[in-house]
Length: 374
Image (cartoon, rainbow, N blue to C red; front, side):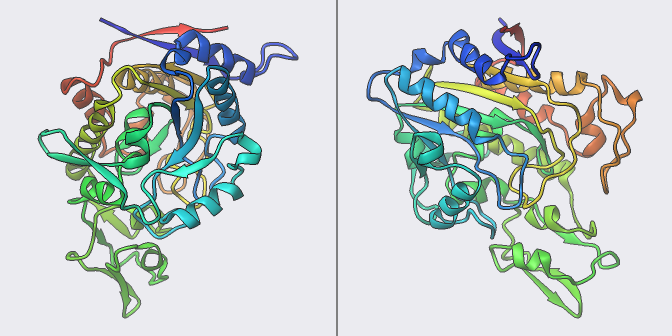
């Protein structure tokens, strides 16, 4: 049986046609208001963007969702969890400062911002899942104890998982720091000595003291490495490599199992919104934003995280690509229309892993009915 995925197109069809007004209609049409009861605590799970990144979902969209939650009688709060790597979001103090800098504050949103895994990322609830990789998942306590959750995901590509949407936002994004490390363990990178310039950027970014520059070349201590892949993301010289074709499968499956843990105590109490705008080759955790791959498409909504991600991939692959040179990746041209753009950017990765596995363990169906809302 197909799951309903509701859709609003990006771009105005007439002078006063606002996508924000259409987002209000999308919220109502998909039935998001039905998961909200008076005075319940409603987590709005998003991503506040790393400092320097500009492609994350704008606070103006969050404000509309906050207003709709309030209209339905709920008590909304915006939330995310702390990161593994050294950046502006690896503890709650820095994370909240960064959120305000990027426009996420009570003043702009009308709701508080709460980091759900606590001051240092150690506040979590263990959820028994007994899956292939994960037996007990470490889910951020603020997310676990929320009555309902609305998940706003910036849909894009990802350097380790190929694709990042609703499943990744709850699987990786709702895990404590220890949970993130558990998912990444085994993704061991390496250094190409010929390409390495010894700039030290990867050493500065590593949160596990696993990288040091010795004789002007980076070296990775495999006993300390957590496999988070951030060194691969920050290297400007393509000197860091990883066997993603093998380790990405494990990462995606663990991520899906964590997503299942998040869903476990919130059956029919989570609704997902995927934003197919500012679609870049990398996630919003980077301190920069890559060139956009396709024009802005629109916003999707569904109660099924598998169906909404499958629909997102379908729409991105169907879109006309932007003819641009993506540094270090691929030369796009107009003949790429209707082809797998994820494979063109990350040829060793397969986005199907997470969607197929999520369907296999019962998180939803990849069969969807796309319903346009006007």
